[in-house]
Length: 194
Image: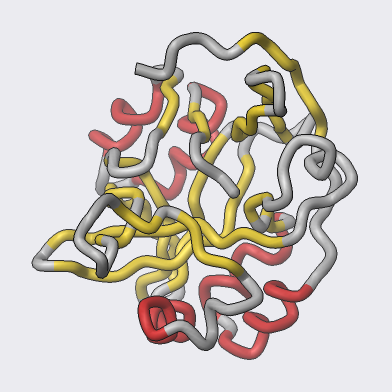
């Protein structure tokens, strides 16, 4: 599962070339911040096969009426009615520096791709009552995440970015691939959440 991730100035600088008509998004990203479900965040979509940054809300409205659905399981995303059309036609990249998980002792563990300024997580998006919303796709954990959690986001290699956004034939391959290894950057005691 991915329930919180973060962005910083490295992410902003890396994706700035994609923000040519959207300089206000650079300001949105440049301060380090944690992103929680139901908050607005910058994602990248493809428009006419060009990468474009957009601000969307993290989480599809829960059909049961409470909260949001902020993750979608890769194993069932093609079958579930809530996600079926989005996975076929509205895929996105969720840009982050890294993400967090918590161990059984409530220690906050930080995961990043070392030697990378940005992590691209596979996502899907849709419109709900005029609002653009996204969710992050998760998969079985790799050896790095497994000791801490039974799910992790699908993290794309840079050469998979355009395939994910523009090549429908690549969807199943990406959904079913073994996740790449990540680095545990640090593990710190969790502070009060609210």
